[in-house]
Image (tube, rainbow, N blue to C red; front, side):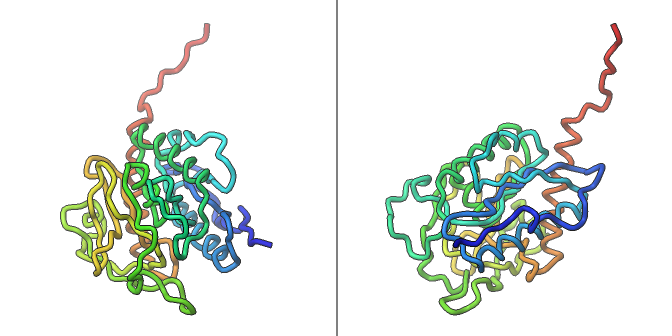
Length: 273
């Protein structure tokens, strides 16, 4: 029997704020094909930490779980921003790959990918901030017409080998004059990485913002709007809390600014006939 992640296992103990600074759509597949208990525990922990961080920063959230078809992917546009979390591989058919037997492939669910693309499209059309993490970043890139490296042959910098812990600390260089560089205010970070795929060709409107020591893309942004993707996992609580709060804090601040921009300052009081 496959492992199962339940909603109550990722829900933060702290209640959502009664007057949130922003309301964020969080897209993730809590369950996906061939998920074993080890991966399920990562999904539980990473999703819970991400939601806890949003709440800690004063935001509320709406979970869009693509484990099953989304009733309305455009719900992302009714929130103040869209956060896309990690998970299984993006289906090669979504970015034109003809490879059938991809080494280390797992969790492929093209239907979930298509739901995610619809949510991204809705959020971008509504000019909402978008933050993608690992799979989430790859989904944003593919949605913009970019491609993915199906399997990194030289993976030593990016994940553990067979019989080793999957996640490791990776040195990542931040490109000057990009949004990510401005967010962190430094030329480099150490991120928690455990990926066998990565962005290959960047999609339309996206620029390189973070790079690994071997040249693999570790992050991108859109210079024209608040869209950021990172390949590493800031929501891994084995990594630095300060970096997670810095990145999530910038995202929530952008969502709050968008909320203020779309909220009438002097709403008209309806008259009684």
